[in-house]
Amino acid sequence: MIYVVGIDGGGSTVRAVVMDENLSVVGQGAGGAVNPNLVGRAAAAGTIQTAVRAALAKTALTPEQISAVGIGVAGADAAHSADWLRETVRDVLPGAMVAASSDHEIALAGAHGERRGILVLAGTGSLACGANSAGDYVRVGGWGYLLGDEGSGFWLGMEGLRMGARAADGRSRQTGLTAALLGQLGLPDVGALVAWLYRADTPRNPEVAALAGLVLEQAALGDSAARIIVERAAQELALAARAVQHRLNREPLPLAFTGGLLSVPNLLNNLLCNLLELPGIPTPRHPPVVGAAILALDELKRRG
Image (cartoon, rainbow, N blue to C red; front, side, top):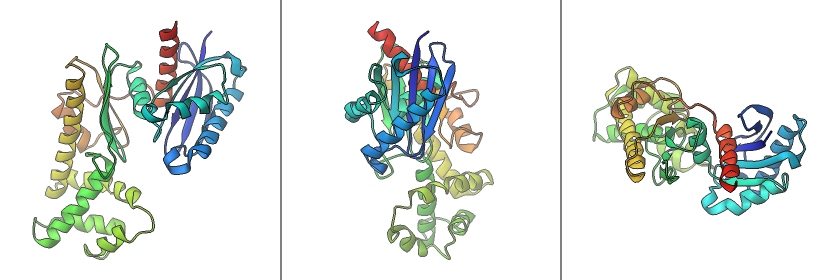
């Protein structure tokens, strides 16, 4: 029996699983934040290694019995951090092959059960990615909250606040959305947004992203401003998905949605399904950590 490890590292948690070649889980481990841009490379590596050791400890296996490892970590895409990812793994599993990847690529492999298909992700951030039968892989979006992330939780929340500012100026019509957003933030009026946003000790990204649910709720209740925002979000996510397919030579590929905004039925994913002509919400087959293990198995096959 062949055994591999999958590692999914995010900004808040890391998961590690030991799996056999049939994708049966035999051991699991978890830990805290491992995005190296947030916690530093040394701390991130230590947390990842602890999670892997914990997963291995729940099996009867030795490190030498692990044939390969797939790993994807937020903030450490293999395009620029492959050496660090490999070194982190080899300190725990020195004899294993390492498939260094990205958090979005392991999510894609998990969603489809293979490294082929298109994935649309919308959570705090957003992107679309895909791989075709030739093995080509592309990512669209994922530029972060300053350059893009259209259709994400942060984008929805910020667009809601911008609508409030425009309405306060008389550049757009007043709706109930502004009052609802200010109420959630505990602010007395739109003018208070300036100090709240620009004079905070740390970026307000989590609080802004948390407003997305309220924007979706208000849109579903018929608020015209909120509806415009959600429609634009769906259009941007659909555009990203189509761009992926175009760059993959227009090969017909299965689609899946993931991320907090697209994981439950709501107006956003209903509109997105309509734009992409899907009969229903396409849910992932497996979580990203299993996708990492799938990439590890692919690496074994590739090397023969």
